[in-house]
Amino acid sequence: MELTRKSIQEQREAFLQAGYRLPEFDYAKVKAATDAAPTWIHFGAGNIFRAFPCNVLQNLLNEGAVNTGLIAVEGFDYEIIEKMYWPHDNLSILATLKADHTVEKTIVGSITESLILDSANRPQYDRLKQIFAAPSLQMASFTITEKGYALTDARGNVLPAIASDYAKGSEAPDSYLGKVVSLLYHRYVSGKLPLAMVSMDNCSHNGDKLAAAVCAFADAWCENGLAEAGFAAYVRDPQAVSYPWSMIDKITPRPDAQVEALLHQDGIEGLDAAITSKNTYVAPFVNAEECEYLVIEDHFPNGRPALEKGGVIFTERETVDKVEKMKVCTCLNPLHTTLAIYGCLLGYTLVSDEMKNPLLKRFVEIIGYQEGLPVVVDPGILNPREFIDTVVNVRIPNPFMPDAPQRIATDTSQKLAIRFGETIKAYQKRPDLNVQDLKLIPLVYAGWLRYLMAVDDEGKPFTPSSDPLLEAATAYVADYELSDAPKDLSRLDPLLSNEKIFGVDLTAIGMADLVKRYFAELSSGTGAVKATLEKYVK
Image (cartoon, rainbow, N blue to C red; front, side, top):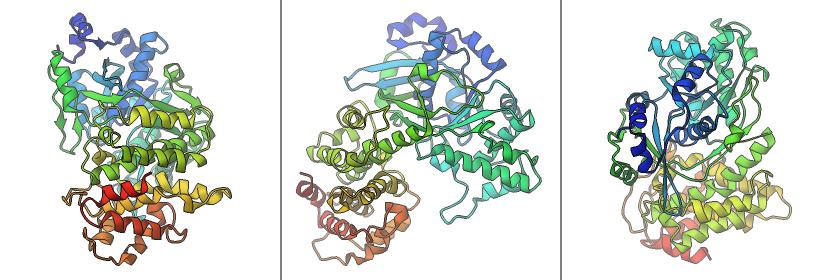
């Protein structure tokens, strides 16, 4: 058996006997309808897209609730499309790893076309323009990571590729965002057609980030005489172009070798993973958890697919904001970051294994239930306590989820302010709460400082995960060693006062001394991390 449309058609019974769920819709009919009148195009052909939106749409196609498929586009790493999409007829296998030790296997076939976002490849680019000129197109969605919306570097300087595209215009841009906005400009000149631009990236107020990038390009091109004057107004007109906020949540780790072996045992050939020239690890399958949430602001000027029939929640912007803050600031992301930092220090390679450690399990429970939950605003559509219950008891401990603390530790300096700083700010605003009562959030901050030393609790060096501020932050701990000797901790003060990293000035709010004390204990010798946890996590 092979992962191709011909194979799943000719060997349908063999796939079914091996336990695979197959597409139940008439693919030829759906593809013809999509080619004639596309409704949904998605940028970012990675794992969460394949595991979540694609599967939601497949379920709706199977039920007859919609009649058009998805168009997938990759604008950063073209090899994802070339090596994984095209050879497998845009099919992928979704291996849902359940906490009850079962694996649900689904062949997802809702993508009818996949393209690369390369302005130098005229056939591909012209096809994208054709799609964007279609009056039927309702939404362009994105999972391009928060970095994908960046226009400037850390110092506020416009990135060279962006500056170049500002000056060149929409004909043949090179940057990801430039190419996206050039397609939107083509939609504008094709009749000022309406469209929803839907960021599904895991970042706060994601729609605003996308809107800011689009408007910046439109302004630059209009000011430079490279676009019609009305384009800047078009991208700001909510009746023409909308940028809904959304919150997406589904853990989709890197494709796991054990899952690949399981699929091979079923007799499916040609599932080898690959590493692209841009260092993307790709495979014809995605392994993911069962839990999933997608909440989207219901603002679609040209209509939208009936995704609510597939479990997607549409609501107003204020509710999306509450859900996003609930998840990112309290109920999931802070717990993940805590386990990432301390998992690396204690030598863990699986997050699920960390939850077998009573100290680490209690650590995240206290941060979630005791320190975070008191300041969570209930969004009404998802219960915060029940959300944490599922995270702590089902999602993170899932032994089949091959998620690593090293992966989650990526870009930690960019996460601390939101995942913990927002809770501190909320405590500051509440007269009935005291920042000084927060004891374990400071221990996470101290753990990150200890992590920057790049030595685990046994004294063995490790390589920290990638982070844009890794080099700068590491400099503050460069002279510290695992030792019982007294340390001049004042060298940490400039870092601890950095509001961009921690969300607040830890010195100004009186938390810096506690963080330094924790750090001194964590770095007092081998075994000090475990000993410190035993002392403070009760």
